[in-house]
Structures are given as C-alpha cells and as structure tokens.
Picture (tube, rainbow, N blue to C red):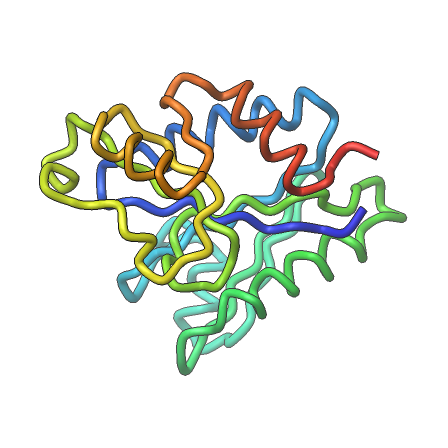
Length: 187
C-alpha cells in the first residue's frame, strides 16, 4: 500500500476542520495511521507560547526548532519562501517513517486541509449555511475533485452530472469507506 494524500478544500466556514476531526477519528478507529496537514494562508503563526524556551530560541534566530517530549514532538522551520505541498508531505512521510524504531508507525494517509491548487486529489466542501458558498458554483476550480461534501441541492446535481461522489456532512462513515476504496487502503 502506497501512502496517499487527499486535500479538503472549501471557503472559510465551510466545515473543513470539523469534517476532518470526524474523519480522522473514523479512520484511526479503523486502525489507520493518519497524518494531517493544515494550510495556514497568512504569514506567521506560533505553536509555542510566547516567552517559553523554544519561542525564545526562535526569536533569537534559530531557523529550525524542535520541541521534544516523551509523548510528542513539534518542529518549526523558518522559511524564506512558501514550500510546495509535495515537499511538506514528503517531509511528513520521512519523519513518520524514521520513527518506526521509536514505537511510532508510518502514516497510511495524509489528510490535507486547504492547498486548493496542490494537484492532490481533492474533496470540495459547500455548506448551505455558509454565506461564502451562497452563490458559489461547482466548477472543479482546477482541482482533481474526487468527491463533494454538501447540503446544497444544485451542488449535488452538478457533482452527479460529472459522476463525482457526493456525501452529506454527517456521512463520515460512508466517506471513510469511499476513501478506503479510492486510496486502496484495505489490503
């Protein structure tokens, strides 16, 4: 089985994070080792608390910082330019594979939130309650769309006309079944 990455894209407040939380839980309950990658489109974010040691070392100029504890590890690398999503996924694979002897497992799948034009197979989200989706049409937007998550009838019809799988926001198990199938997760 080869590692597979799948992007989930939609406008702000379309439910990407909430869906991914449920999907990660469902896939891990089936025994898969799931990685996640969230695209943060605005410069600057912190995963450490201001004033803590790792934050202070980064502020002092460290270009690559690692926080390691007995139960988790976090890495922060300063960038001069945005990295390609493929490079980030490769780094995740390398790190997850390198830790096998330390009691971790290589990843089976990476679920990516965002990265609309990544070239990855994509699941598009459209939510009726989201004002950002009110007039939005399903047009693939240059993505390799493999499924649509929606509660909007016109979007369901557009996906169906293109023979693209369509799910509701609460159909997490059915979506996980579909991902198992298209990603060839089951051996």
